[in-house]
Length: 189
Image (cartoon, rainbow, N blue to C red; front, side, top):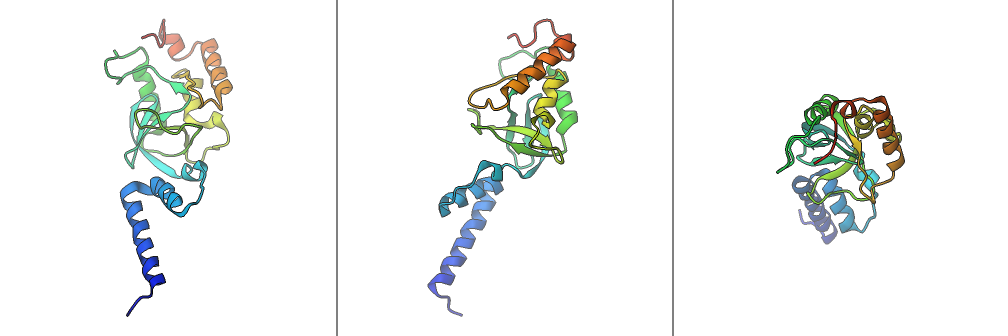
């Protein structure tokens, strides 16, 4: 059977698309395909997939089943694995709480303005599957601050929810819970 030019082009394009998915993963493939086709897709479309958390790096960083490392937006926890930095007060507790909340679970991620940091980690708000992603208070990021395991840590331009995170930190400090109770000078280097 002989193929005409249109059929050959369609088969070639399909093979290229399949190869992109294989080599780049679903999210990257969607972006690459949209770029090739000249289509503008929003990050919301790219970031609403469900992902499984395979490892918790520390209190504010996780690893997904696809190998990506994700740093939580708008929060900071005490350091436990940062090179050339001593283990800080309450860092192990923050890591353990993060592990209890997300390790082995399915999550949904949303982004803000800047999507990756200088270390190549994705910057995201993390929600357990089934949570309302339109309510930032249901994010794991927010829960860690609300429970006193993290502080509000805003790096512009990712400041959409700055007021909420600062309020949750103030409430945790006022309740004297978590790091605010256990550490005399939290987050001091």
